[in-house]
Image (tube, rainbow, N blue to C red; front, side, top):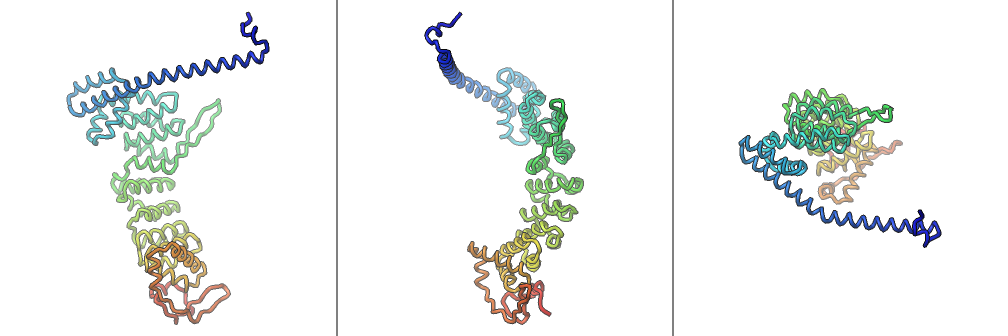
Length: 429
């Protein structure tokens, strides 16, 4: 049976175009109907959600105001019957983040929290990864230790986000179990094996440095006794020791000092670098002997970070050592040393100016002049004041060698000539 449209439009291409136009009009009408339905039903759904959250918040606050167990059980059962689990979860998270620690513990041990935990455990077994991720976050919010077994299992989840947030939740739920399970998890970087298309391949889930620090911070290592903290640091692999130092620095400087002191004496170069870097950023009170050891370390990045510690601590008595570092073979060590002398104020600026004029090391002179010129261009008041008070006399008896170095004559006089500085300046015999 032929459609009547063919009697009016005989060309098949025109008929196809007409059908396309009719389908487009139908789609537009359908979209308009859907938009109208959404606009009509959305306010009703939002009102229902707000009402459910309001009821759940009222029940939770009422639960915190009394201690009758029978009343708690009856209200919990009525709550799950009256409102959706989503409204209960939202209200629970809103309340638990705004109450004290004692109230949090009481709320997390209630039947309402048990119902949320049961729902979260079901989510963690979902086929969809975002549902498992939501379950891990809910278990972290509820904070029940009964879920630690499931969270440990989720550390081997094939999706990296699920495994990371499961580790994050485990650190909150059970720090003791987390300390035992998360250290191997971070060290192995979560390497998992996936089965796909009957071919086994390895997916490397590499945690970033910030993620590793986040997990260790969540374990609250700063609450451990100092001896246990040091033993844990010694047991860690060299790759994790910088992570632990950073986590302690972010958690509080008090417990980080002893660990940093262990780190600067480590045989691993990366650990020493991170230790001196942490000491410079947080201005930890290292001994002068420890800092001097860093200034002569075989690795130049360690020397470059140790120089920053001198500047951060304002150790003016280490000006001679900084001047000696100006002759270092590495550019960054020389640059950081010159910058550190500038940060030490007038004493450091005078020493830097002296080296720029009288040092026999061409690289030390060049770096001193470079940093001084950069600082003068920025119009640093401390540097300008120090340079204004200088009165350098002309330099007599200067000999120029083939190596373009300038020999210092002890007979010359300058306001910068001190017993500390002359020790580090090579003199002619």
